[in-house]
Image (cartoon, rainbow, N blue to C red; front, side, top):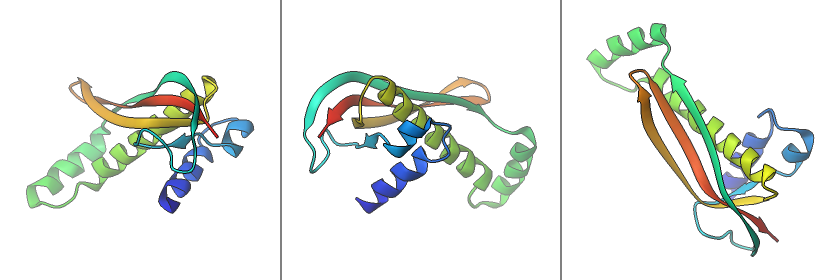
Length: 129
């Protein structure tokens, strides 16, 4: 639970959100409910999505590293940043619906073009107390 609270705080601060949203981050859960809270109102589906492309110069260095094995840190960082952005947009969309939490969160990825991938986070926007 502490890890979730830390993640929520990290997503809310410095995400380009307004002060009201940052002070009251939208809670997130992959489960259908949040322990200690009860769902009072369903607001609908909340979605956060972003499309990213690879950096050509980093692509070359990663290709060289791939020949020798090991983690491709450029791609790991790219995907981590992309997931964080999709989650932030999910929280922003939920807040715009009047929700203070999103439950049942799932994430998907898909290739949009040869070098572009979409990461989408989605779930049910709810009001919890």
